[in-house]
Amino acid sequence: MTKSLLITNGVVVTMDAEGRVLEKADVLIEDGRIVSVGDPRSEAAATAERIDAAGMVVMPGFVDTHAHAGHMLTKGLGEDSDQWMEITGRIYAEATDIEFWAAEAALSAFERIRCGTTTAALLFGGGPDIMRTETADAAHAHLEAIADMGVREVLAVGPNRPNGSHLYRNHTHRSYTNVVVDPMRQLSVCAELIDAWAGRNDCLRIAVSLPVFDANELENEIVCNLSRQARDLAREKGVLLIQDGHREGSIAANAAELDLFDHRSLLAHCIELTAEDFAVLTRTGAKVAHNPSALMSVFGRCPAPELMEAGVTVSLGTDAAAPDRPFDMFRNMFQAHRYHARHFKDDGVLPPMQLLEMATIEGARALSMDEEIGSLEVGKRADIILVNMRQPHLFPPANPVQRLARFANGADVDTTIVGGQVLMRSRRLVRHDENAILARAERAFHQMTERMALA
Image: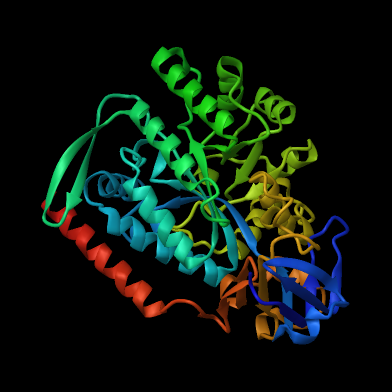
């Protein structure tokens, strides 16, 4: 049970079905849920803790539908993206321990809180070949750290590609042991994690991840068997199936060979799609995580506006937090607009309200959480941010939706609330020592670099 909280005097951008924007409105929260939006007619309002939101926008917290665990401690490594990917792969396989994953998780949650992202979906590892699910220990450490920070998260755990042997190092103090990673054993660990965290924490969910295989790879029966088992695990447990990197016919190939997708599938990037890919997305109800800041959006284009026109749910992801992108969803809204406006040579593509929808309610819909989060409506979880609009780059005080989508950035977030709990106020964490989080991450980073030097 949490105490009542009343947010007063703000401009409330509800992101509800009517797209209501309410001037000098109040939001009342009781026991972690929204009980009124507008004029609170409740006795609880008289005794509630108050936050004066004068000069601020009150809106749903952002929902980032694609990112990676681990990346926060690999920024700045390598001279270009290829070198960064090679170094990061070695780090994840050879130089991490349980403390690395816990310290990185706390740092990642810290940045998300600062940027106003209250919910994020993260793959546990870097790409399809370095998923640290040979045992459950690293994922447990990550999830416990996230639970302590108080943000909402979907963690996608899954197997590596079954292409040869994967050798990991498990570190304890100054020694390590080598472990040969078996993708089928990884799936068993994923099932253990799903069961272990089911109902354990209101803010945390587990999903199943699976590498993206193209039509040629799907001719391999080992690949198909692994994919079927991942599909069946996700459906048996009632969790999302998340994939990273669909492109150029891979959606249609997996649908035809494996019947892989349904309404609980979330597919990241989705560049250079074919007509057959489009047809599968519209038929199955699979969702898309569009990442305009990602490297894959340089290599090819995600047809996000066309997909939405066809009725497909398209959300925004940061693909954060490295090698060259933060968890700042404001930045991704701006980049999404420029990305598609340039393609169509039309500045009217992806107007501000649609961008905000992609970053909030459509993100919630992509994670099958739209009944709980993504908009400010009575009965929903109180995942709310306050954005300080009394700043020169956000003036004059007209059209708050346009100012949010075109001019704001993560540093403008003043207050972050998850489930009615205030995590940040006046840009300072309420429940945690910021310097302690940074110091812990620094220690983990230096320990990792020492191991890399020895390797």
